[in-house]
Image 1 (cartoon, rainbow, N blue to C red):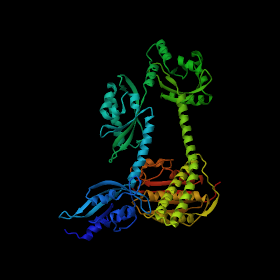
Image 2 (cartoon, one colour):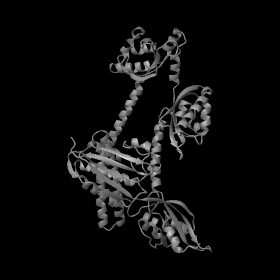
Image 3 (cartoon, rainbow, N blue to C red):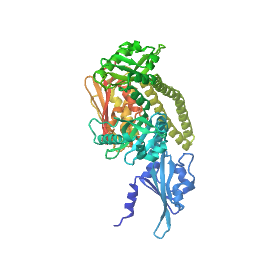
Length: 633
C-alpha cells in the first residue's frame, strides 16, 4: 500500500501531541496543529538561536529562557537522542504549559541527516494533579501519625500493607517497616492461636458480604473484631480493629481495606475483673477495690447493690449511702433523668449499656465518666459495670472544636488581610502594564498581563475563602431586598460573558417567560456563575451546556445541565460540604478548593430558596436552584 506525502501530513496534523521538525540546516520547517495550540503561534522558519525567544521556551523551574544548546530540538538536530526532557512554555496568551520533549535526527535510507524531529507531550494537568495529591498525602500522613490507634491500608490482592502509621511501635513494639515488609503473614503470626481461625473466618465472611453488594451494606460500614495479639516483648494484648472497604478493583471487588486498631487491654482486663461472677463475694470486693475503675452492680430491679472503693473515693459517697437509689445523688441534675431512662431501656431488653454523663466528685466538681456494663449471665440477675473518668478526653474534644473555630477565624482574618494588598498589587500591575505597553516594552507588558490573570485567580480564591468562612459563621453579607431585577436578563448577561471566555462549549439557553426577582443580584449572579463554571470544567469531552428556566406562582427555577463525568453515587450526599471534593482519580485533575458548591448552597438558602441535583457517573449532572418570587421576610 502506497501513501503520498499528503497522507502523512494529515496524520501528523491529527496527532494529539505537538510535533516540530527542522531541516538539515536547522531551519524550522514543520509545526502540527497541536503544537500551534501549545505555543499559540504558527510556524515560522527560524534559526536555532531564535527558537527560545520567539516561542517562549523556558527551563521547567521558570528561571529563564532556555539556552540554544539546551533546546530539545537543537539537541536532536546535533545528533543526541532526546527522551522526556521537561520544558516550560509560556505562550503569549493563556496558561503556561509543561511538556515532555522526545525525539532525534531524521535520516534518509543512505544515512544522510535530513533534519530533526521532536514530539511534545503536554503534562500540565499531570503536574498540577501530582502537586495537589502530594499536599493531600502529606496532610493525611501528618494526621495519621499523631493518631494513637494503628492505621493500616491492606491490599488483599498482594497480601501486603500499602500504609502503616507510626503507632505500630507504640501498640505492638514493631516498627511500621516490620509490618510493611512482613505483610499479611507476619500480622497473622502475631494473633493468639485461640483467636486466629475465628478472625480469619470472620474476615472472609465480611469480604464476601461486601463483594455480594448486600442491600444493607455500605463501604463506610465498619466490621469490628476483638482479639489478642502478641507484643514484641512476648506478652499478648487485647486489640479492637475497625475495618472498612477502602478501595475496589475494576470489577467492583474489594481490593483494599482500611483498618484502625486500638489497644483495649485495660478495658478487657477491667471487664474480666468485673465479671467474675463465680468467685466469692469477699474476693470480688477485694478485686474490685483494687481496680482503677469505679465498679458497680445492680439487682434484677435495677437497684444498686454494690459499689467499689474507687467509687467512694471519687464521689465521696460511702458504700451504704450509695445503695438502692442513693448513688443517684452523684449524678448531674441535667443528666440524671435521661441516663436513668436510657439505662432502664437497656436493662429491660438485657442489652449492654454504654453511655457518657457527669458525676459529682467529693470536692464538688462535676467530671465526665464513661459507663460500660453488661447483664449478668449467671443465676444472679442484674447488671455489673464500670465507670471511667474521661474528663480529659472530653476536654480534648472541646479543644478540637475550639481549634476548628479558631481555624475559621484565622481563614477569615487572613482573607481580610490579604484582600487589601492583593487589590493594591493588581492596581500597580495594571498601571505598570499600561506604562510598558505605551513605551513599547511588549515582552514586559505581556508578562504583566499574565501576572494580572494570576492575581485575578488569587482574588477569586481569597473571595471564596472569605465567603466560606462567613457562611460557616452565619455572617455572609447579603442584602435580600436590595435589588429588583429581571431574572432572564441576569441569566443572559452572565451566560454571554462566560460564552466569550469559553472556546470549548456552547451555552444553550431554553428560557420561559421572564420574572422579576427580589434579592441580592450580585450573590444570585455568583450562584449562576458557579454552576455554569462547574458544568464547563467537569465536562471536558462535551461541547454543550444547557440552561433552562421554569416558574409557577411562587418561585422561579433555573437548571444547568452538563454531559460530563458525573458524580459517584456514594459521594453525592457530601457534595455541598465545605472543602469537599469528589475522591475520583479523574476529578482530582481539576483545580479547586471544594468551596464553590458550599457557597452556592449557602447563598440560595439565605434567599429562602432550595438547590438540588441529579447526576450519574459518566453521563453528566443537572443542578437546579429555586428562588421565591416574593421578597424574603
